[in-house]
Length: 249
Image (cartoon, rainbow, N blue to C red):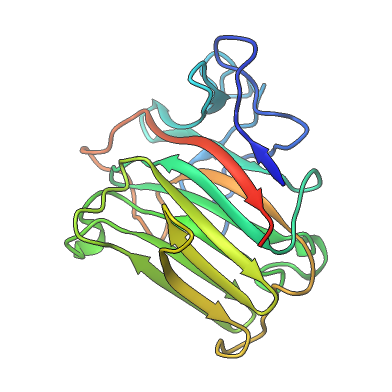
């Protein structure tokens, strides 16, 4: 029923569709002590640079979100959001993504309630279709993984997806099936459900039947969860998104 295929009709590094995507900007830490300066398209305010954009649609018809280190201890990246431009309630939402695997990298595909401007977080609800940190041995788990989570007032849930041989550096489709009272997450196939949450089993306040949510795609650098980059961290690192698609349930 809706998609952004990130088609490049101009050549070079194109602007993500301004009818769909706007940006969070700055280096406030975003509640997680993140280290990056988020740069909007067209920003030339240091350390951002229009000659080296942190989010662009490439000639490969994919969205590139790029974490860069323009100088020692300075990091830039991008956080795209559809807030005020596009939102949804219920349906199947998925994105095909290739993730960076490097210390301090924190890519995510997620949603927040439109009512965040009035009730704030976490009351607005947060749906994390995909989060990933660091590389193939994050937090000494010994395996590579992604996580699907839900957050609300007094409510937190997160389940890892980590089948044998899984690599987040490969292309995968990360999806969510959202219906009244229930959210499930899958990888590569809607039949491959690995996490399920419902209003009847979760503690706290279930916020996902209140109203629509908007989309976010971002690549954070550092923060409470992944920790800081180190000498092994690769810059630039990229989160590459082939498409975002929404289907009816």
